[in-house]
Image 1: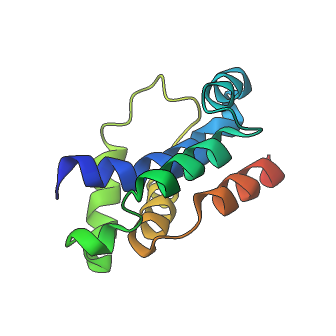
Image 2 (image 1 turned 90 degrees about the vertical axis):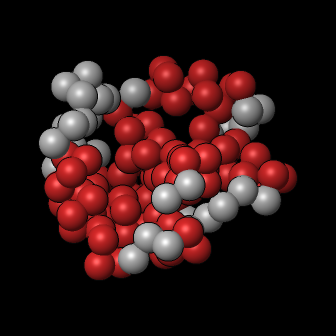
Length: 113
């Protein structure tokens, strides 16, 4: 997988997942991006840059998601802002694979917390 494109696709989903757990950091990101919410600012930047949106566009197959989730789960640092399960990673990777709207994930995370 190409490094920059992979990160461009995955970063907004990670922000949507972790952001609600660290509101002060999320606020600093929003401020830096001149946005009301960090995810909105990042999404606007992605639109302006025409950044990649889906892992499937770079050769990542849907069938790769379970193995990737297990591999990532094994190396998530203990300092991550919130606990991460392989199930969380499967959902995040599936959203990134299909190019789903990370802001919708952020809204789901905020409403479930």
